[in-house]
Length: 60
Image 1 (cartoon, one colour):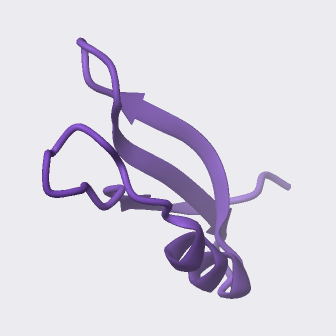
Image 2: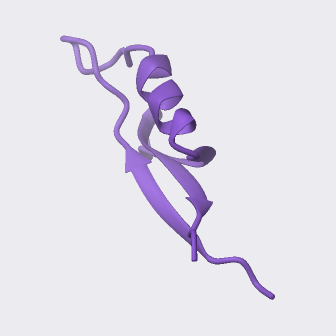
């Protein structure tokens, strides 16, 4: 039996300069408590993280 997944993305909060990302730990802990697991990042071509990608099993 194959497992089905659902996915979520989180855009890391940016500081006023738009260059320094703020720590997303609080948001990640909330998502983790709901069963989400960080699996990948989508990065800008010139550096920095655009999205954090999370997944969790679909309950059936």
